[in-house]
Structure formats: C-alpha cells, structure tokens
Image 1 (cartoon, rainbow, N blue to C red):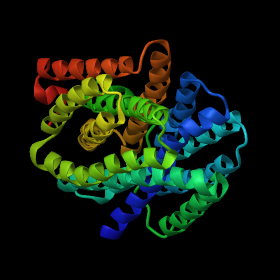
Image 2: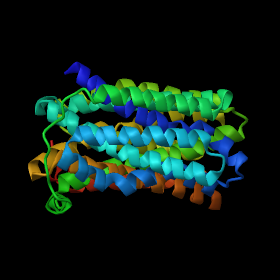
Image 3: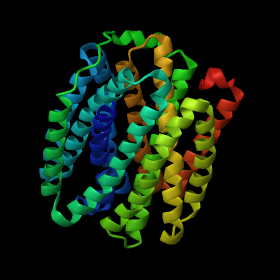
Image 4: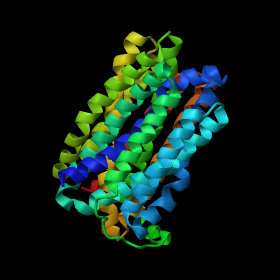
Length: 380
C-alpha cells in the first residue's frame, strides 16, 4: 500500500512541478514576448484552460475504463507537451503547449485520485489524500526550482529532462493493477450536483485556485520589479511550498478525526487576513514572509475540500472518477479566472485590488458557511 501511495504521489508531484515551473519564468517570458500584465496572466491561465477543457471527459474516461488507463494516457500527453514547451519559440506555441499540459493533467489527477480512493479504507481517506496533496505541493517546490534551472541551463534541456522523468513514472505505473471501473454516464452527476456538500467541496477547490492565481502573478511581478532574478523568486515559492508539504498530511489526519468544517473555517479566516495584508505590502522585506505564510493558508483548503468531494460523491452514488473530474473542472475554473482576472484588475487599477477581491470572497464564504447548518453545508 505504501508503494502505491508513493506512486500516486509521484504522479501528482510531476504534474504540479510542471504547472509551477512557469511562475519564476513568467517575467522573463513577459519581457521576451513583450507581454502586458494581462497577457502574462493569460499565459499563466493556459494550463488551467486545458484542465477545464478536459476535466469532465477525462473523469468519465477514468470511471468507464479504469483509473490506471486515465493516468497512463495523461502521462503520455504530459511528456509530449513538455517537449513541445521546451522547444516553443513564440508565445502562441508556448500557450498551446501549456493548454496540452493541462489536458494531460486532468487525466492524471482524475485517474490518480480515483485509483487512490479505491485502494484506501474510508477511515483513512483523508490521510491518503493529504499525503498525495503533500506530494503535489512538493511538486510546487520542485517546479520553481526547475524554472530557475531553465533560466540558467535553458528551457530545452530542462523540460526535455522532465519529459524523460514522466516516461519513467509511466513505466512504473503500468505495472500496478487497475481499480475496478465504475461505468457511468456524465448525466449521473446531475443529481449529485444538487447536494450541498458536494457543491461546497467544489467551491473550496475553486477559491484557493483563485487566490493562488493572484499569488503567482502579483508576487512574481512585484519581486521582479524590485530587481529579483528568477532564481530568487523561485526561492520564495520554494519556502511556501515546503511548509505546505508538511501541512497537508497533518490536515488529512485532522479531517479523518474532526471532519471538514474545522480546517475549512480556519483556512478562510487565515486567508482573509493574509489577502488583506498582501494588498497593502509592496516592499520585498514585508512581502516575502507574508507571501510564504499566506500561501500556507491558501493551500489549507485542498485536503479537506477533496476529501469532502470524495465522501459526498460516495453518498450520492457518483463514480469517483467523475467526482474528481468535477474537482479538476472546479480547480481549473479558478486557475483560468484567477491569474487572468488578477492581471486585468492589476493593470486597470493597482496590485492591491485583486487581493481585496480575494479577501471579500473569503469573507463571503465564511458567512455562507455560518448561515447554513454545518452538516448541510460541508459535512463531517
């Protein structure tokens, strides 16, 4: 079982490392291709757009044909897209490569999480998901480091090497037995989408994606404007992700013992406070520690949110592959809207404005949870 959890962790790790590798390189590509803040935000959003396009189809695929096949297909697409990203010589090819990476990501996440949930007892599901999320966050550590390496060694060598690592993981994954298929049509999700707990779980997946989209864009550009190199920017994201890696398995255990409500409310309160603070701090001396700890608050939504989605789907008779396909779509929607909207709002007004919007969303969500009875809203 431990080896299998390690395999799933490697799958999501390599995926998130590829996603986050662009963050420290974003100012470089903006200068190279003469992108505005809005254009840079759109480039950052391309990955999420690919996930959004493929989220539901890959969820249905994972449920109908088995999660392992979805994982293997996703890894093939990710490896090919990594090579395309490595050799892209204009912003359009770069954007297309990121969209294709997102499509592969949708397949690997839907398949890997459905595979994991099928193999783990229900009473340990929160811890297992928390461990996988810890690995995903560690991938977010590796990603900026890869971006910094690419800044020095070149994108071609760096991202071609990453594609080779993906192929190795694919070969290992092919040796593990698949979970039983849960063939369902997509219309089976309609009754489940009327369940308040599932909707709440999807929203607390959207919200941190919105916050992280703002985080990746605004923090990168503020530090770049202050004269920081890509490697120094990567170090900030490295520190934030290191703390999240430790936090997520602990959050998973807390979910197993106390339910979803306690960690979600704590994440909302903390995220509200840090979003307000980030709106008013612009110097690196104040921005860096706030960004590192603020990212910890933003990341605290994922483990309880995903466990809530899985549990709600099980109660509603919805296949786990489709449930995690819905989760992918929710995450992707936040990642498309977050950086694109943050870039547009920042360019039209100030860097503080996107953070104020994020703080308002956290406050509104917290009020909504308090107005609705706890078990109806988030379960547990």
